[in-house]
Length: 183
Image (tube, rainbow, N blue to C red; front, side, top):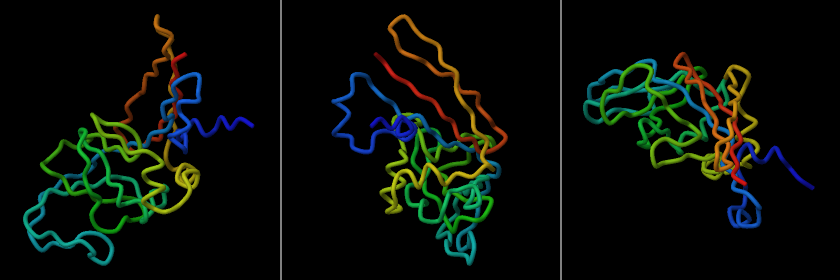
């Protein structure tokens, strides 16, 4: 039995990768953008029920993705990637947005990666699933139709690799699906 759909989220068992006659790279990524960046004073509360309190002046970014989009409370511990740095989600995740602790002010529109690679760091669907203690497929199927899908086009290169170009959507959250292999 061949389960091609598993190529979207990557092989569940990394030890089986060597058995494949080609290299698979994860085909799914989830990105959004910062839509508000603000310096908060110490002792300010963030999120539903004020579950996070700043202990010193802190830069906070708001991202337009929440549990109604499929990014559930139990996913928050995996953090996000901003300019290749792993940052924490702070406070409770709201229906339509969440907040992240920033190490400095970033411009509005800066890309925020929930699943995928930025710089030298990667957050996989498996990372999210392990943290939330749920199956990988449950994570990848949780994203609702409120998140636009972008399907990448491929171009073959002289070395046989397929390269995919991704249109960057700075207006909100996108889920990008692509399949890259080398023969």
